[in-house]
Image (cartoon, rainbow over the protein chains, first blue to last red):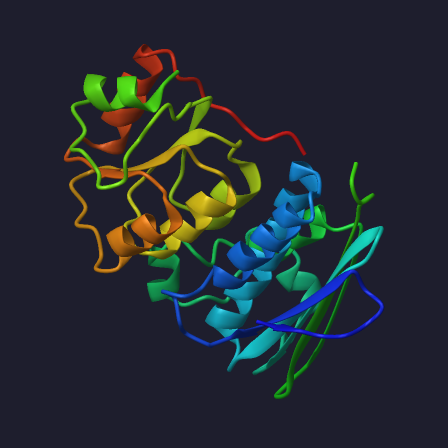
Amino acid sequence: MTARGTGALMSVTYEIVAGDFVRAGEAASKLKRVLQQLGLDPTIIRRAAIATYEAEMNIVIHSYGGHISVDITCDSIEILCEDSGPGIPDIEKALQEGYSTASEDVREMGFGAGMGLPNIRRSADDFSIESRIGQGTRLQVRILHRAGE
Amino acid sequence: MQLQAIIEALSLSACEEPVENSEVRGGYCSDLLSDVMGKAAPRSIWVTNQAHPNVIAVASLIDAAAVIIAGGIQLEAGTMQKAREMAIPVFATDMPAFEVVGRLYELGVRGTVRGV
């Protein structure tokens, strides 16, 4: 985790390692602690944790590695996830509940149920995803909050 | 209800985390991690057959009261260690998941889903 100096109240970046299922989820856990320390509403924290966890798992499962950068401002949580990887050929399909390209091994662990991106979209006030085949995927999530309430 | 009462009623083997006054407000049963992530309510007791360390990450993120790994599934190396690190009570039992959930229901634990 590294802190960056921007106009945000706080900015953090987490490096995500492809295929590391033991450490997977640590970025979401660390972000959750940061948001708790900032005193944000538990419902907002849960939504940010869901979005970050699912994005983190997608990077672990599908990419060659990437990072998640989070800016917390006075009224929003901005989550930017970027990976290098094969990219998503059909984003509309990937957003469908139940659609997954995860391997059988990964599914046996309870991942790859095709619920990740739909969970992220449900948790977000703003959601955008773009992907380039052979290069990688960029996902942006904004969750609105009012600090201190 | 108190986690301690559930531990005694189901004869769950003592986990290494001290469990003091931990309240269980409901239950959730699923092996799909995204399903648990999206739907399990805080302070739920989560019953699953998954035994790998990522279960603990999910349990921590949803504020689970405890995890019961059912069906005599062997815990993977690293799962207990992660549970200690994240202070999540984890119990492994030979009882199948159906039996565990049935007993919890008998004790008054009800299925809960988080409000969106």
